[in-house]
Amino acid sequence: MVKQKIFIDCDPGHDDAFALLIACYSEKLDLLGVSTCSGNQTVDKTYRNAFNLLNYFNKSDIPLAKGNPSPIIRESRICPEIHGETGLDGFEFPFYENKSNLSNGVDLLIDTVNKNKGIIVVTTGPMTNLGLAIKKDPRILNNIKEIVLMGGSTTEGNITKAAEFNILVDPEAADICFKAGVPLRMLGLNVTRQILVTKDVLSKAKKIDTRGSDLFVKLMEVFNKNQHDFFGLEAGPLHDPATIISLLNENAFVFEDMNVSIDTSFTDQAGKTICNKAQPYNCKVAVKVNVDEYWKTLFEHLEKCI
Ligand code: RIB
Ligand code: CA
Image 1 (tube, rainbow, N blue to C red):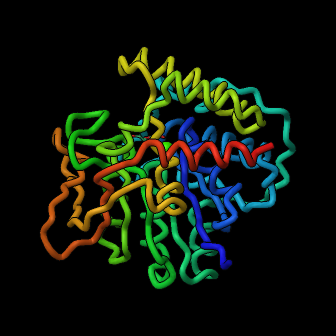
Image 2: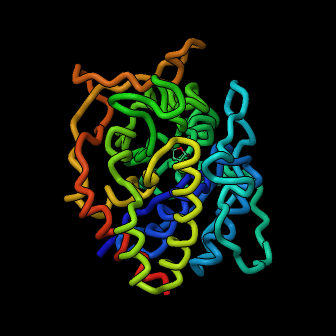
Image 3: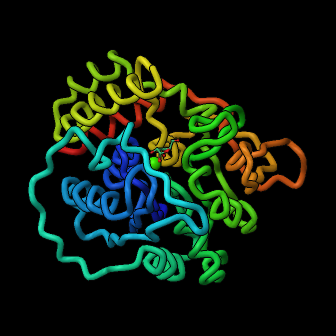
């Protein structure tokens, strides 16, 4: 079976961590590289977290590089209320020696895509690095089969009434990506907020009893406490793995073709994903989620992280 080549840009981030885990352990995917962005925490901290995660998954050979330290034009906005001071509070990683000489996440994305026609680029944080990569070397658009993102919403936002965090942090970058002319697949809050790390999910994860489930349970306990304290939620929504799961399990999501554009104003609508069913459509937008199928796929991969 030919594996689907992918590149992930992320801001780990408790939920990003399990998008990475699934990508690392899937037999159907070939994760060719990872870049990190400023989002849930600073780019230095999201890099450190991605470095620790790839080492924990025994995938330290996967090229990893730090992306742009801030959004394209707007001020950085981080989210320690949910992800903590480290950006991945709740789990103590062993010490791993950093032998990488890769320094620029945008260039790593460009080089990887230019060498791999048909690659899928997955973003689970603000789209800064992909937006900059498209501007710096538009040739990558000839090789990208699809951009799959966690971001936006067909309904309300989570940081403002209008906007979801990943898009709100860098609307200009998202605008570049949504106008780039390559197929998009959007997993927005309208579906990911239905994917809750409930007590039942946690107890099922505990029974798996692998290194992957140990990581999941420890991180989710902190994630859920912060989601409760900050958003008043009984269980945290596990947004980012939806991107990877949508590539692996066709029963997990239902998509509709839509025209999606980004509000890049400096009003209270900034960062809104304006979704309508008008033509020409540019994006497959997730409109339904089968939560049982989602957890089935996630647990299958926690089992592989032994
Ligand atoms: O709004 C949710 C998104 O913002 C997720 O990707 C989370 O990790 C944060 O990046
Ligand atoms: Ca994220």
